[in-house]
Image (cartoon, rainbow, N blue to C red; front, side):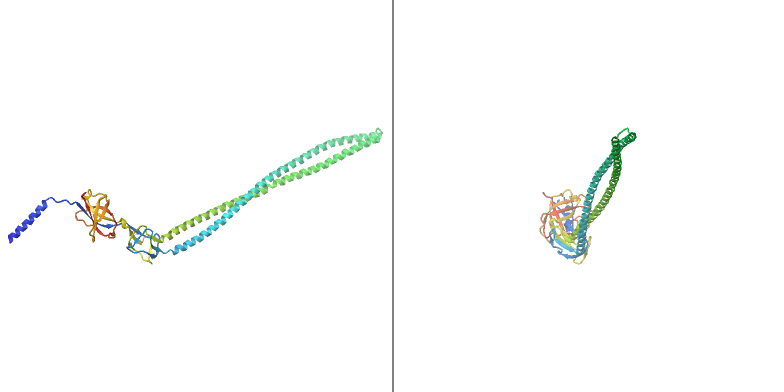
Length: 391
């Protein structure tokens, strides 16, 4: 009996040695351990506030644009109403200031027309006054020449009268002749005195013309007053334009704040950015959400994939586009997938990954997208990928 046992042990050892030295059969399959993953979209509110409505739960399917939840917007609505009221006030103020500005511009135009008219009238009046003064001066000169002639005539006739009077007294001439000379003297004397009076009138007219010219030139002060008024109106226009610009800038600011407030109001409606399935819901009605709070995590089941790691020795045997089969627990049939990503850099084996060869320290990441989606495929599920190297 003991001999039989020894023979059996010898045969087993011999078979082990033979198996050890026999060439090993090369496998045509590459086995990769990993899990099902998906590109998860975390949804957080853009503004903080109390969550007043939640419309979906974990596992629910949603479409892009579906309303997932609502945040209290009462303060924003109140603020928007106040802003609209301010906008109406500023708009009315702009209308009033625009009307005032228009009135000032009309007044400036009218005053300028008045000034131009006054300047034109003054120019004409000065020319007329200067012309009247020249006429009066010329009139004096003419009368003075006449007086000079009349004076000479008067002196001559006076001398003649004295001589004729002596002759008359001596009987050298007749009485009629003497009376003729006397009458002529009286006539010339009268003309002379008339000319003296005309000179006085001409001098008086000259002084009046001179005074009229001076008074006419004084009307230039009226134009100066109009020019000053124009400057004041122009200053008022500039000030009003400045006020209007400031008010318009304020209206632009209010419009910008209103736009931002409307955006914030829209942000109180939390909507799904994609078609997908809610993986996690991390908020309840009545809770306060902040910008850092993740309300929902959603993934697209149409874009789910396998992710795993394989040792470097397979790197030259796997390429993007290769077909693969993915196995998950509870399903007899594999899921068809296509290799879509192979890491270009090696990394240390992640702790959660199990490898058939525990001696492998560095591995390459691999991703394979499924050819068809399935309700059985869920992110986080452990899975195995097999690549058949046979062409």
